[in-house]
Length: 345
Image (cartoon, rainbow, N blue to C red; front, side, top):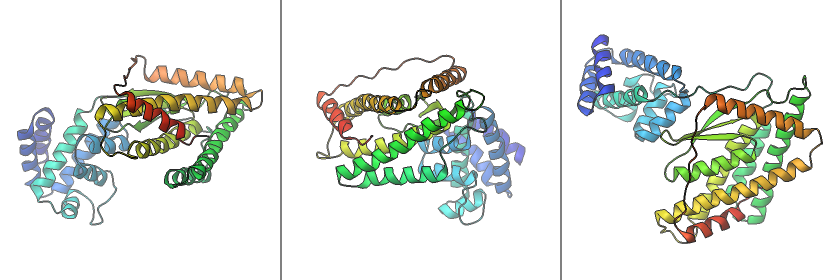
């Protein structure tokens, strides 16, 4: 039965809905379908990992390309659990699905995984790279969460300023500490994938690139796959992810303030302008922070910038530049105004 299912799954990966139904029927008819499904998932996920995909990438792609049901199934296959045992049978019971429906969702998920293209494997920061301590990250997250939720601009400004101060100070300390070890401060560049969700992915990728640049990182957007790969040192990658998430929340809140009906061109122009203005503000804030740092900081930062550049070129030897055009003047104006009100420093 396993050979039959493997052959049916291979046909489904190449074919259409009829092939999916055929593979699902074979799996649903297997008396030991849990074991057959587990073996096929293990082989498929291992193949994805060889092609550069990490477990969290697969979960994100399931939610992006399929349905919430498939995302939950992907989580169950990854060991998130259903509260009712493990395996496809437990998932079917938890979701109240008949065997065929559960098997069909399973085949659709594995078909997605099989069809994913090869991507660059992420580069881990070498041992010793100074990531932000867990307590500091928890404090930064708490500050940003309060800044996003408060209804008082002055309070939000103070909270965001404190979070930005902590991130910037740790980044500078990490660069100086690295430079003190054998005079090498550039070692330790790694990479992280950050999802860029629909809609208006281009504008959101532009915002992520602005945050990355201000935090001494480089960002490469994979538009067809819905993520950007950010290359940088551990504390800077932490700062990028935290600040980008917070700015997205602030942008969304500003976009929906007042009128509830906005055209697509307005929304996209708003976000493009928001990203452009945030780039300027963050660049200014970074320059101010560096100007107040010790004189020996600049060589350390230059060495780290070179390591980031080298790692980016190794991962992405060929890239192209994307340009976005704002089509709504009112959206652009509102986006710049929202960016001026965003809490950064």
